[in-house]
Length: 382
Image (cartoon, rainbow, N blue to C red; front, side):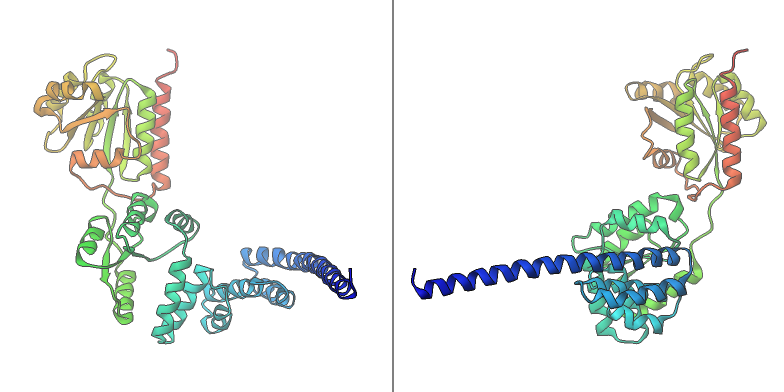
């Protein structure tokens, strides 16, 4: 090997050695800085969760000195500080931190867009909302966010394919917890707007949006709210199968729209309707002491048909026979085993009624637990 070759080899070895030293130093420094950041960030976030905001923000700001040595860490800390100030409604203080926040944090971008809207910077508002949409999570994660917080208004968009927003709207409206929260759908056309209203949206706005119209609609909904809940529907469930009673009764109770009473026999059912006439009696086709159709005939003799609806439950294979046996006395037949996810919808569609959709109150839970205890007492040996 000539002199030139030895020089090239020495240069390559020197560069390789320098690279190894650099990477080793970088890893050591990174580990050191990461430990420093963890020591600051963990207690700071605990302070914020415990609403010790001033101390938490002070600690987060002290971490900015170390954050500059790692990519994206500084912007994430700015996001955290800005979001805390925003939630505390200190919008002017939050603004510079949100501007320097992490661009992939969709909550930060949403808050920054609202801040731009307050400052009447429409172009920046639109561009930032676009960033928030691109970084936003899936529908499942949105439902998780809803479950962890308290919200006065939900704004959805129909989406480019016209389906994603509607799926999320349907899931939200299926949960009684969110029934009282008004929902606005940002629709691409009138057909999508009509579909949104059918699925339970309280209002809609056609795109492209005017910020002033948007604010007016939102303010109107926040002021007006949603209509008051309807009264609960009194339902007597009759079935010799105690497991079927408990499963169906619990699902209907949790919907918040039904006040449930139980009966395991025809004799008990006839006794209970004389105590208080229910809105609906839902009985199995076969009972330990009497057939379901015969019980329906006896119920007709003591109940006002215009006041109380009668429904049979039967296995899918026997549903047609049950309907013929009940003839015109019944409103319809529910097939067993029940599909718990659709039971409330199937029953309300069958009865053609709209019931209250809200989380059961403490009083409702107490009444239902009392019914369960009464039902379970029938299993006790005599």
